[in-house]
Amino acid sequence: MNDRTQRFIEALFNESPLNRLPRGYGGGRIFDMPVMGVARGDDPIFLKFKEVVGPEHLTPAEMWLQSGFVDEGTLAGRLRIVSIVFPYVQRIRDESKAAEKFPAEIYSIGRNFANAFMNTVLEETVIFFQENGFRAMAGMLSPVFQIIVRQDPVRIYSKWSERHMAFAAGLGTFSLHEALITEVGCNVRIASVITDAPLQATPRRSDEPYANCLFYTSGKCKKCADRCPGQAITEQGHDKVACYLYGRVVEEEMTARLGAALKPHRRIIDGKEQISYPVGCAFCQFDVPCMDRNPVKKALP
Ligand code: SF4
Ligand code: SF4
Image 1 (cartoon, rainbow, N blue to C red):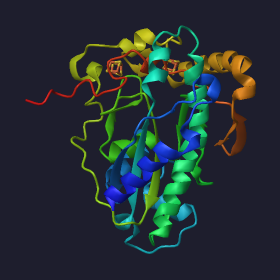
Image 2: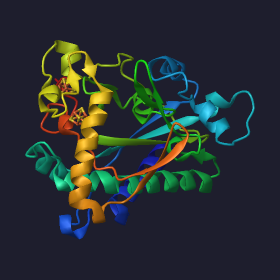
Image 3: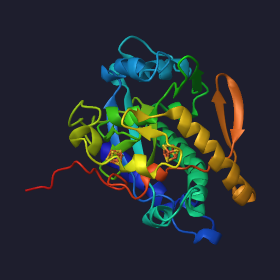
């Protein structure tokens, strides 16, 4: 079932017109080939996420039940979380390396168009499981999903963190810039589907949360901090508020430049619907050692 699921998702990446930039930006792909991992719903790491993300962060079983599925006692052990890594293509990365202060237009367009493609991948993967006789849903598309903002101290987090799902599925680890460094780097997007299909879990090599980041493993690097125009990264980590504030500066500039080309994105923040036009930022992900690989991975003998 793992191989069939992987092949199904790969076909979507190859064939979907939504995985394409507009013609004015060359019409090429937004994302290269996906990487897939699987976590078990009863992995104890999901309880740990309530401590490290926030108490409202949901386990897969909680997300499943709160989204309307009816089930009995042994549910968690039957659920699987299919985490999908979406790596940006080389052209977007190459043009982004040269950008200063504001992102390359091709990245902002790709970042904005990516949401529609990611939603389609999730919807189609849910249908794929249903057509094979199983149940499935996507946490990110559930009405239960929302972003939570807390004061004193200010904290911004979601009820379903895709980076944490990918960590659980063994796809990567966290980093100084608070992204996930996968085997294909940190310049990726991530999404997931929950299903009761009998998939094999993909093991984590380690539960060490920062194993792939050069700063945490050797005290060196910090290139992401040097690259950040919003001064949002220090040796203490990633300052979400500073990042958010610089993101608003970027959004104002890039929506003025690209407005008519951008697609709206709906999200729920603290129970209220908001429509935004995401354009990204991500200087910290371009031209850094972890952009497109795991920089800590040892060369094979
Ligand atoms: S650029 Fe270096 S310090 Fe920053 S996240 Fe990547 S590996 Fe870690
Ligand atoms: S997204 Fe932009 S502001 Fe936020 S940490 Fe990365 S480079 Fe800095």
